[in-house]
Length: 151
Image (cartoon, rainbow, N blue to C red; front, side, top):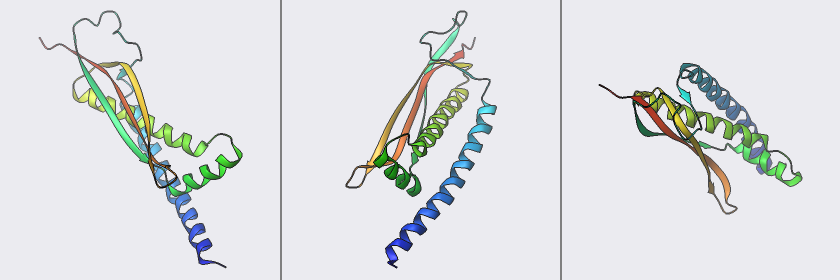
């Protein structure tokens, strides 16, 4: 049997095992931090709610770049042949979105904010290689942090 097949299978198994472990650990961290920051309200509305006149407004953001592991890349490549949902990439994007929002909330709390309005998300893929394969995704969450005016 060709050594290339052994290398491919080994990399595939390692990518699956370590990728799943890293993903589970990251999701666990996200869930814990979401509970911690659940009291900081975030809204997609452009204007503050009524009664929020005495506040300072400041732009806050959170960015994250998450790499696509070898296993996800192989599975997505195989799936693209037959079509359908790329669930391996969906979980990657979910983690990235949630992490970016958490980082934005952390930045808002550091500024003394009581809420964040006009929250937006920007997503981009970072490609690599000859075939311009997706190497990683970046998600940037940003919004307007409202803080009470110090008297």
